[in-house]
Image 1 (cartoon, helix red, strand yellow):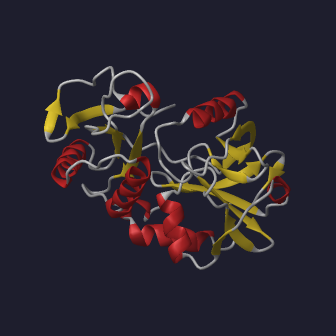
Image 2 (cartoon, rainbow, N blue to C red; image 1 turned 45 degrees about the vertical axis):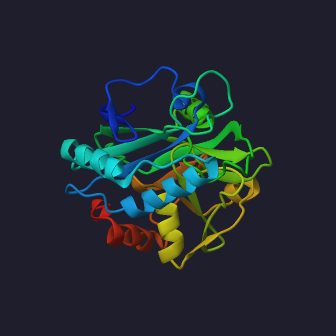
Length: 276
């Protein structure tokens, strides 16, 4: 079940808005970005990483960032409501009239929402490869952009099949991700995660693991590799590491060598994962 979102506020420039403009380009075209952060003890330990990804995505889309004071205000209000929850920032290009062409001088909109933390899974996840395929689009690959229809359809397919999560491959038959996180595969004794330069999201937890867990490497993974995987886990910035116990008809080890070290890497950086 999806976690309920509570609106904290909407800002355009330094002005607080009473409601969303129906002509907002994020609503009409998915023209924007979002970040989903896990709060812990009234803090956002990974905000610098989320901030850097937001800035990089905004630069690629030609989207102005809000002033730091506005970002700080939105996060402070979000933390006041959800000191141990989830804070979501949505940045759109704002309103720009009808048509795809963006305005020459956009007035970006910032929205802040909160939600409770999702409950931890009671058992290792049951996953499988989805029939839906991701399109390759290098111009958008890696970004946390608002165009999430592929993930929406993937999540629906996973639910219809009784899965905890669905694994997603691209149109060329390369494994990319899960619907709500990055995927990590143990293959021939090594831990690997697929690149996200043609599809997928450059996840915050993924980036941290690549930086600080020497056992992990980035490498392309074909569907034939998935079929002989020794172990799998998924990860994202809200739920941390989620071991997989079954992929399709195969039972996998949910406590594979190296998994404890991967958990320790996240726990050392974010106290919200210290008990995972």
